[in-house]
Image (cartoon, rainbow, N blue to C red; front, side, top):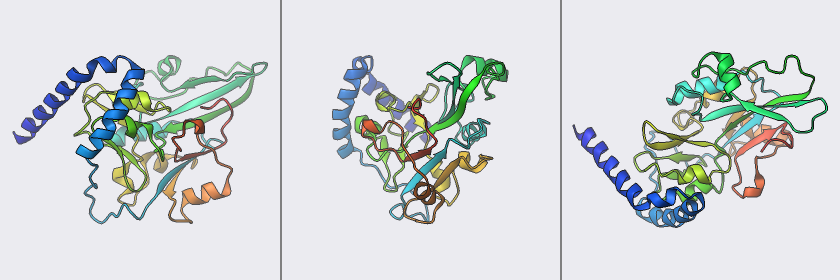
Length: 279
């Protein structure tokens, strides 16, 4: 009964906030500007608290992620594992992580880009809960093709944290950007602010969601679900404070890059094998 009362209270607070600021949500520019100011005020009122994880010291770690696009085969096991592990809605439009396919045909300069959410791929899979890439280029002359896994970049300077009006989105001391759904009011300022399209709105729960690098796993010494199931080791995860960790070696031994460095967000997902078409 207490849980129901608490949930009702939370829903009431959310409705009150949205009633006050609802007009700003309809205008993306105004929403982000308003959210920035509100976020600064809210940070003092609702400080991020240390997650209660027995035996875990978040001051000793600095997590980072690596992606080798030269290895990814587009099998989408990572997407399926993430959905199951994190209870992401089982449809073709809500993802914490996804994979994009880039195909350049002979005689063309611009790449064709699709993901598992593309209608042709959904039709080929036979279900919105099954994720496959259709073999649409089997009769075409392909000059170049590759897959690019994408996910939240857990930025050093995350725009989503700056615009959150309640402090629900915050950055932990170990570098992971998380969402406290007790404080999320579903305003979607963070969805608009993220330059990587890494956040989605969960209509059923009325909150935003995104990749957390499986924080509940990594704080227990496990790998993120997507990393664990990748059959070709295209996804790499580890602690930058450990110079011998997989991700430290990946960054040290490769010429890495990040997505959209011009935004100033300073992503902590490092890529190998990106082409100019990838943003």
